[in-house]
Length: 350
Ligand code: HEC
Ligand code: HEC
Image 1 (cartoon, helix red, strand yellow):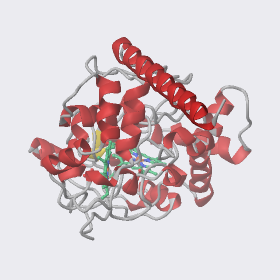
Image 2: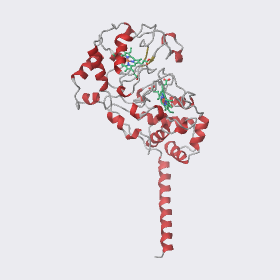
Image 3: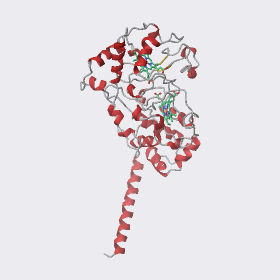
Image 4: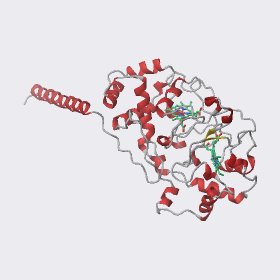
């Protein structure tokens, strides 16, 4: 075979391969996206997924791309992942989050963990589902400060996204509802329930005497009484809104800003305590730097505010010794899930 014949064959082969590729792509598009097998660990209930946004392999992948893509922000410098970092349990480690214009917000970034079990989002529950939650940060002037019109036109200009949206949702025209659907799909995969505590529950690990003491105090109604709100096991929260007496007159009125019901003044969503050792600083305004400061707040620091939760109102100040507070902190450290932290599926796509 001479040289030109060889290259002719090579060209033919390339055409054949690309035709086959196209054929396979066409076939895959016809078949529709692949359902995503969500592994719900023992100890967590079934996840309620909206009927109009089932999880698919293609949708989760697209959501992961978008979550880490700074084109969703006004000057293309900030992505969702900038304020929700895996190494900080999907928070940013700051007291207040800082947006693209360098402006500080008034609230502490929230961990994105086990979101599929929550029915309201933000510290004040201002968003009812994950899909609508994702609408906010993109246009929030102290966060990504973009317009959806602009973000959408930038997404549309990238051929890869045209292709990925077609694969995930079968659509030719990318629209905002599909952008947030994809992000929500990715967020629902951020499941954490493999901490030392979980391994202990499954009989695979031991807790130290101090950690066990902390667990007892956590549920003991005359001591920690944490269990009333951060319910032991499962998601470690009932996600109800409560005033924990951080201030006698709340600076941030929390839930009240959403409902305008005076009995909601100073109430915030009870956060999960999973991976809590990784998400400092703490509370809606990041006022506490350590877990011990948090326990001290419940032991001695809380204020008798108007809407103070009855469980705290009746709690005796100073009911826990220093050693007991430290035991509760030790127990909270058993809620760190190393496998979740190291799961490469949650990192930006390389
Ligand atoms: C500038 C930093 C910043 C950026 C960028 C950002 N977030 Fe957040 N996120 C926060 C802060 C702060 C809160 C708490 C806000 C509040 O309660 O008012 C939050 C809350 C959330 C919550 C609520 C969690 C819960 O348990 O209620 C979700 C979900 C979330 N963000 C997802 C996203 C997504 C998706 C994006 C990208 C589209 C994004 N965030 C971009 C800082 C940020
Ligand atoms: C009455 C319900 C209630 C009780 C009891 C309670 N908590 Fe909380 N906890 C909350 C709420 C609500 C918040 C959020 C408060 C805020 O930021 O305004 C919170 C926040 C926290 C935080 C910070 C979480 C974060 O992501 O910043 C920690 C840590 C914590 N609680 C630990 C405990 C411990 C330990 C106990 C027991 C000693 C306890 N809590 C008792 C309702 C409660």
